[in-house]
Image (cartoon, rainbow, N blue to C red; front, side, top):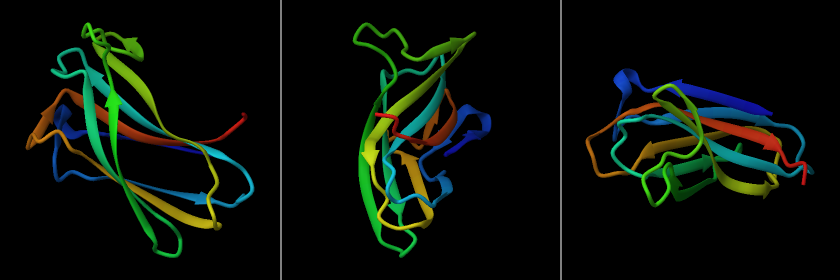
Length: 133
């Protein structure tokens, strides 16, 4: 239904650099899956990344959330698909969501890792797909 990725300038994600995505929902009877796309380099120093998320509905109502995205296992091996020194992850955020009204929705998120600049994150994105159950 929707997928967009944003390149993080210089591979250094500043705390105040908000990723913003807008998408249209027309089918309010369908169930959707929401996924967060994260691409990191081999030199990313952590096994996870925390995000602060905000979803804004067409009527202006907002919902906020905090998401812990695992990027590596307990032994430090990165998860996801590898392409050279880059790792692509699709992190499940919400499954089987029904959007209550048609219209434009907006998702904003920022990194919440307590670092002014978070190194080795190269791209962030959002994917909305119909739930095939």
